Amino acid sequence: MFSVLEGVVREAFPEFTLKVPAFRRPPDQKLGDYALNCGVLAKELRRPAGEIAQAIAEAASVYGEVAEATAVGGFVNIRLRPEVLFAEAVKAAADKNARLPQGQRVMVEYLSPNTNKPLHLGHLRNGALGSSLANILEAAGYDVVRANLVNDRGVHICKSMVAWQRFAAGATPESAGKKGDHFVGGWYVRFSLEAKTNPSLEQEAQSMLRLWEEGGSAVKALWQAMNEWVYAGFAQTYDRFGFRFDKEYRESELYLLGKDIVQKGLDKGVFVRLEDGRVVFPLDSEQFGKGREGEERYATFLRGDGTAIYITQDLGTAVMKVEDFHIDRSIYVVANEQRNHFQTLFAALRALGYPWAPMLYHRSYAMVELPDGKMKSREGTVVDADDLADDMASMATAAVRERHSADTISEEEVAMRAEKIAIAAIKFYLLRFDPNTTIKFNPKESLSFEGDTGPYCLYAFARAQSILSRAKSNGMAVAESFANLGELEERALALDILDLPRTIQSAAGSYDPSVVANHMLKLARDFNVFYQKIPVLSANQEVAQQRLALVQASAEALRWALSLLGIKTIDAM
Image (cartoon, rainbow, N blue to C red; front, side):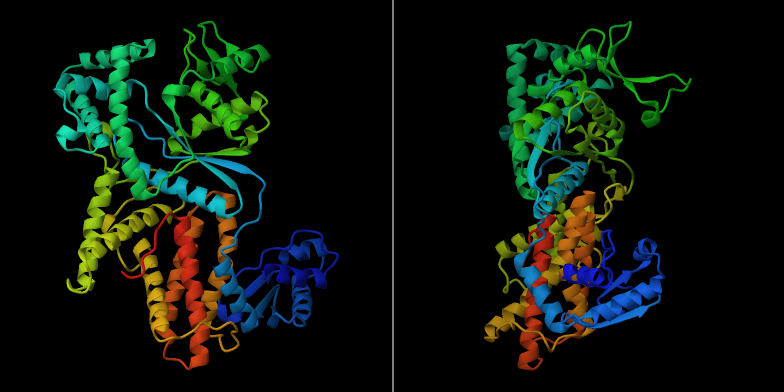
């Protein structure tokens, strides 16, 4: 469809050499289906925008797809013929085709949990963002690899191990009746509480880490056992929230990576050894600024004793990922608190001469806060992902039961609907905002069946399914021609569906799932307006069948958009 509109411009002005500006929906739908601002064309053609708009409108009027084209100032407004508009919308929904083969393999690394605690609300924002971004990139035509880097070693892991040794008396998740990650997380909190009155526990955790790095068999055995408890718990949470991975990297297998790369960089002059033995990377003052006294700044990549630090590991892991999967682009979904870390890492890789280094991207995101402030894992004040999902499912269960008497819906059906509504509420709330916006998560607001929520979008889908189900029961078929459609509410739906593939491409280009989330929200709103104002099954047969095809296309578009956000549909609320 957009190629037709661009063709109109090219026909009117074959001398135009730039990319044709995008046709947009006009602010007032009564003006037309699409509008073009001719200002960009005017600059190259050196002609008044109004004159250009008039010429394009005249050229468009001879196209069979165009019902009306008018010039208003420097804008041209185009209304498509109903047979074309609705047929293209139905086709787009059925094809679910946003793909423009990109010829690139992209790795999306997301979640990155620690094996000393369960996933919490902050992880859910990371997971929702990373998994939906992977879905959107895949829909846009990229070959996507989903990766997870698990932080499974370090002093924070040893703290939960020390607490278990000291206070657990041999307890296990099974004996305690707890999910494995919650069980281990409890010992991490216990360590922090005990360390307030017994500071020697901190030295004990450091000593345990040294024993682990030296390969102490008893420490390694305990570490393995407690990590397996956590992994078993993680697997259940991943499944519940739809987080999946093609590759899982573990820090315990990677933490020594990068030292050889640093040494080679030292030989090439990329890194510098200071008098105290540290190996550092000089930071470009234009990008990173200078120190307080105007001095040059450095980033340490090896300590004075030759040991690696976290960024050394990331250096080696970045190279390993390319070697493992031959990726062209690598996206790190990590909180914005690590922005400086990734800027430094990427600058070092560019300086080392890796050709793929310019294709590394940090998809940063802001924190999720509670109404009373930030979450703190060590104090046990986080909102655990599982507990949140349980609470939300309980609230959703009550909402479903309000709408159905006990004899019309089974308990199993109530539980299934409540679970899907709860997960949809959480994910949509976390995805509808720009990733760099700090969110104050409001469970009650996120579960509303009205407003800017996941359940509202599910409700629009369920309404469409209800119409389709009743039509099927009445033996009604959907039409394949659409000459009788054209109400503003109908056109709004068709345009929303037609714009979805372009929206997916835009979201993929900006690494921002909120673009899809907000477009889907508009589609849901427009469908609900259509549902309230436009009769479908009670219209005459010819019109009813045509509107039924539009309802079916709307349902498929909603299902498509919801799936990109990792949200499962339900046919009834």
